[in-house]
Amino acid sequence: MTDQAQPGGLAKWGAIAEAIDWVKRYLQNHPIASLSTAGGQIVLGLRTLEYLFFDIVKGRFQVREFLNQAAFMAGTAFTPTVLVTIPISVTLSIQFALLAAQVGATSLAGAASGLAVIRQGAPMVAALLMAAAAGSAVCADLGSRTIREEIDAMEVMGLSVIQRLVVPRMVAAVLVSVCLTGVICFVGFFSGYIFNVFVQNGTPGTFVTTFASFATVNDFILTMIKAAVFGAIVAIVACHKGLNTSGGPAGVANAVNATVVASIILLMLVNVGFTQLYVMLFPRTGF
Image 1: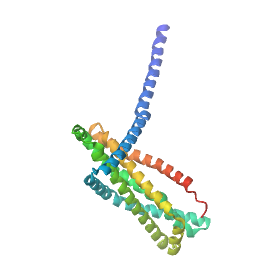
Image 2 (image 1 turned 60 degrees about the horizontal axis):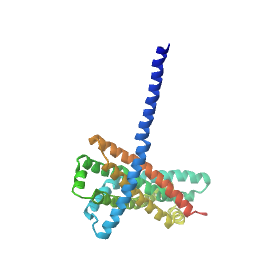
Image 3 (image 1 turned 135 degrees about the vertical axis):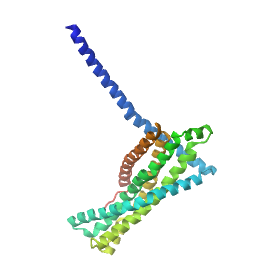
């Protein structure tokens, strides 16, 4: 009887031990790894700002690398951004026109769609396209250099990887993100205006007047601040993933995928924080 019960007891304890090991591996590979990644990105961001400040003061900023990266990012993200902005603006115009018709305020459809593009659509579209196009390219570039041990070679020669590679890319990403956001504001407003006037039979004067009545300078300032912060986030996440790539070519592909996913999630969370903070600091008392 004891001999029969003993194998069952050993199997039971073996299953429990296996379950405990699985939980430990899960915590090590997911929550703990996520905290480690977040901490590494924060440290990289702070060190990048530190190097940027001292490089500007001492005149050591990598201007050529900055210009090359800015031109590359702009060329990569400009056309997709414009092509994405037009259907988004038209969709917003359709939805707000339907909503305005239900409440009997069709004259406000133009203002609502224009404000939606400027306050939320422009910085988010620019950030998402930056993450998908520029961020993935930056991660692939730095990841390939890491796999080829070029990063290690730079460190052996006493060259700062952050100063030479990360700082120019972050500044370029911030500049391009801000410029793309401005382009999206113009294209979004113009396409919404064209669609409202020629398709929805709206009045041109009403569209412009209501938009000018509702939009404020603070809205545009907030949009530009969000664009700059989003660009910096995309650059830091992409550089961190690229510099910590391992596992050969497959590791580069995994790092690029992780860059896009992590950037989008982080951008969404930061956007919620910015929006709520703006509403708290600058409440709208009425229309």
